[in-house]
Image (cartoon, rainbow, N blue to C red; front, side, top):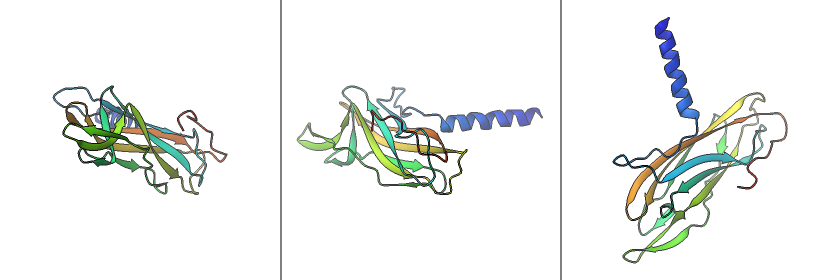
Amino acid sequence: MRRMIVVAAGVAALALWMWVPVLANAQVDGAEPHTRIALVSDVRTLQPGIPFTAGIVLTMDPGWHTYWKNPGESGLATEVRWIVPEGFTVGETEWPLPEKKIEEGDVLTFGYGGETMLLATITPPATALPGTAADLRVEAEWLECEKTCVPGSGRAALRLPVTGTRPMPANQQLF
């Protein structure tokens, strides 16, 4: 019995770790990450078959930047991987216009400083059951640079309840 309780506690801790929004987890030589990640949506609830928009918010420390899908002559593109429930579809990632930078040595790059949001349209299946919830996750990898560059990565999650009614809007100021 005691062993079952220990195993159950471990499974619960792992489940919590996997679904709670996580800040960037990249660290080099014990240094703190310079980019954080969050997952937001333009709805609080989902309706079966009705698309909504989700946003991956990347927030960089002052002076730090990440790169666009085409980083230019240097850098590495930010990569995004969606993990959604079966039957959900995720559209192409929509990238905001990047900042153009000429870095040391006349190197042209494209990227983001401060904060940016990558968007995707997600469509729940028409068969999604009201009364359930959809767990959406995103994993991302990037190169974060100031005077030097370090690899960064992070994951974030969002749980949205499925209802039989029109989706409730959320985060309108962001979208």
